[in-house]
Length: 268
Image (cartoon, rainbow, N blue to C red; front, side):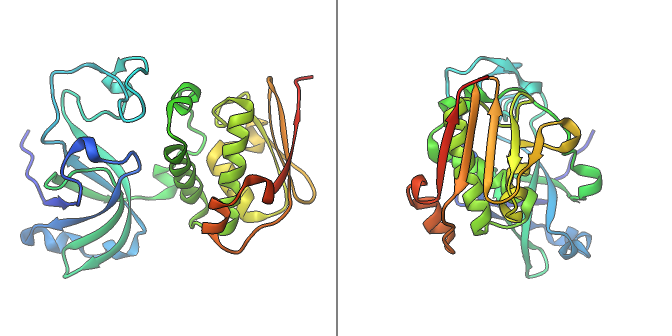
């Protein structure tokens, strides 16, 4: 096999230890000889970015998700998104913000350090590449070890990936999910958690994106009005909206009690 880099990542992050879990805004400098291959790329909002992790170890078969916590259980690298692996390829979905000078791609959510060789770019197509019904492992222990700000960033990304933008409704949904996670002490995406949605469409979108609840998997219910609820075998958290400020920043910063009233019910 012969792999030739088609460009380089240009990022403010130069060390793997400094990279946030959610990545950063960065650029891809496509080499001049490959610039023609970018024709038509502006039509897509997201791209699949394939890179070579040039600083990664190749002889490691088991590792720990250290960005979250060093005391999580060790797993095989094929079940992790760790950079260490026999063939250190990085495959990620990034948001395309724009194209400059014909060959500079401006991107969001890039978790690659400066100078990483780019191998390929492909358009992300929702109908083919998004498997919303996909399931994964229970992240409850991992979430418990996360810093609150880090968990919030993850919720925002999951909500925005489904809804399309960070609007006030999405911000409220994130606050609801944070509080429900604390009360139920559970990953909200696991099958044992069901979700009841109210009538605000942006909140509903965001909570579906965060939890993966659907009518088809019997985890999604609907109510009339401003009631949102999360239930598990350990109990139920019921929220009634009080106020939704117009500013996303205000929603994310204000006390939860100014946004909603919460009733906690024990398991039946």
